[in-house]
Length: 302
Image (cartoon, rainbow, N blue to C red):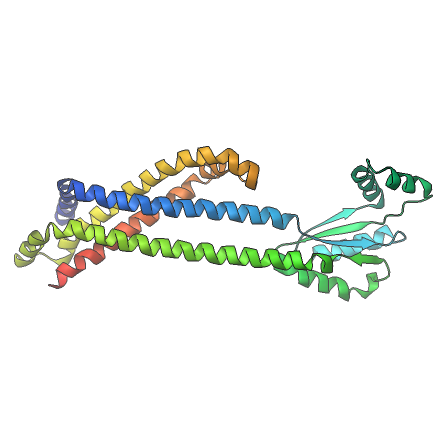
């Protein structure tokens, strides 16, 4: 077994270097395919980060009457925080609401003058409810409608005002996730088919040797092994080359994506390098192994 394994590895390396031009062609095609897949992975991360950033700014605001007791407001906050659909609940006191109103309208003399004429704070407390997913805001709104014990202190819930924006954002998120998955699958299939045909060319040049090996009684695994090893080598080298191309692109795009999408592509590449490496090189190795196995199968059936 050890001797046979050594021979398979030796034949695989010899075949790789003997058919150098065909090997380079296979690596070149796989590198392009893996680069496109890596680019798609980057685009997916940018879109995901952008949508999460938008999602983090969408919430339901519960506004209370000016006479609402703080204890009851905090009780409702506790009830909301117990819901599995809720990610966070932020309490804003009447004083904080007034301070924010003054800050937003500091250049509006009429608004500030109107406040000065009032003897008391006209703003009540509020709760900003943020759901885990945008699709769960409707469930949170229904929960608020069912809380009859708090109905007397709730002045207004702005879910209906934000409903269209929330539903639109939910549809965008679902569409992006589906489209990204579909594009990734199409690219993987296309890369496997292209690599398959390229490796078939490499195997075609040694078809006579395969026939001789079969005539002398060599087993299928002994014949297939060197080509499988070559496929793995193609995928490994192509994956590393694709990473070498993706890295300077990430460095160049990093500041631009950080300012526009609030997501630093270079920082992501560095922090999650092992994941990116595993995905790109892993797909390359699997493509090379699968393509070489399928390509040599034709000659093993004859």
